[in-house]
Image (cartoon, one colour):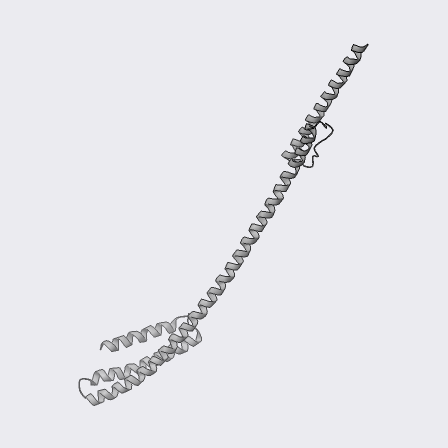
Length: 193
């Protein structure tokens, strides 16, 4: 009696799977064949159980029939397992392929982002350091005594503003030195006369 209840539960489980919308055509065919074989297997099993208490030779005959049905059922279940394994492997391979594509795209995006940030960093560095270096060159020339040098002001940002103020400073310094030189010359001329 336990075996009949197990077979009935298995039949119900197979029917539930057949109603599932996740099954492919091949899976439905195999599940349908398994369901038919289970129902066929159930008949001799019930017969063996009913006769087992009475006639042993008839029970043995029903047992042979049940065994034949079981072998067919076992083959169909083996086919179902093989199909499920094949589908699982196919889905695994698809998932791995998708993962590898996403990984490659992510690495490409990362490489592009790093390259862009390096390029922007280099451009910003040059944008800032070039005017500063030119200002330093003019300051060095002025420190050597050449008051005719001026900073080329090419921008209106803080560095350009610094260059403009520096040029104004050098102009005033140049005028002061010219004025001192003229005053010195005047004083010298007055002392000689």
